[in-house]
Amino acid sequence: MSLGHTKIPYLERLWHPTTGCSRNCPGCWARSLVVNRLAGKMKGLPAAVTSSGYPDYEAEDGDPFAPTFHAGRLEDPLRARKPQVIGVSFFGDLFDPWISDEQIAAIFGVMAASPQHTFIVLTKQAERMATLLCRPDVRTFVADHLPSMTNKDYIDDQIRFGEWPLPNVWLGVSVTNQADADERIPHLLRTPAAHRWVSVEPMVGPIDLTRIPLLPPPADKLDPRADLNALTGIVAGPDDRWPGLDLVICGGQSGPGAVPFNDDWARGLRDQCAAAGVPFYFKQRSGLRPEQEPELDGVRHTALPWRGRQ
Image 1 (cartoon, rainbow, N blue to C red):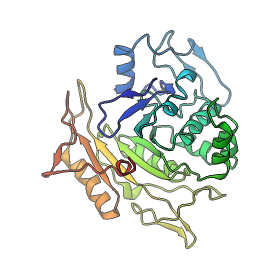
Image 2: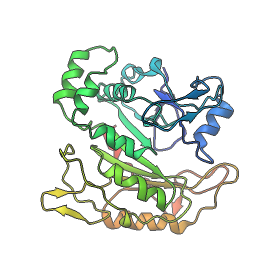
Image 3: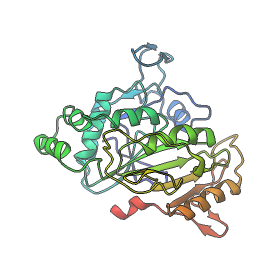
Image 4: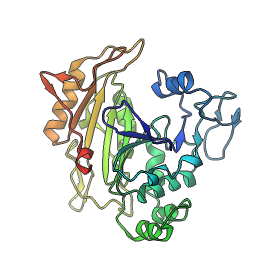
């Protein structure tokens, strides 16, 4: 099984149906971990990969962090009966352009077949996530790409006719600064999801969530929620309200050369979330090995709504 233990305090286990990422962001903790400690354990893509519709991605020969789909790990959550909070593809990006739509659909099929678990998804490819999950045929597409599993017919019916978006899946975007937030959060807000969250980590500057621009929701209104976006207070029309966020997590950078953390950055997010009624979780400050869940002005902010499902 590839459901690994983790030191990430807001998760219980990790599931790696995909690993790697083509963005090559500076200071990526996942790349550093995979390349330095897990090298040779995660098979990468060939030296050069091309695909119509996406920019070419040049992977170094043998790069262990090249985007990769691991079919052998796909059904691991089905074998874990005890409910777990599971981080999905945290050693990469599930929605990386080099992970196919069909592979992502198979992963969503497994999450649909594992309602006992809570799956936490985090991506920087917010636009692709929105494009894929806003497909009018998304249910059929996922059901058509279910991997071999017990009770496949039952799961097929559950996907096609049951509750959607999946109530046990939290979709989130990773941001570090205002530019990231302006770019990615609008796509998250228009993505059909039962729960949405934002990870502001590593936080390298102040972020004002009330200035996030909004994008039109899907024309077919796949998202069943009609709650006001509490962080913006903007309503498109009396019958067309914007969906909001369900959690904001923030934390500083860890490891050598970490960007110094300013508590005012965390205070700003804390106060915005408090005003909007959105749970706030303060993960850490900066440093080589920063304290987990530290106090901010004498208070620990450890709100995690998904803990309530366990």
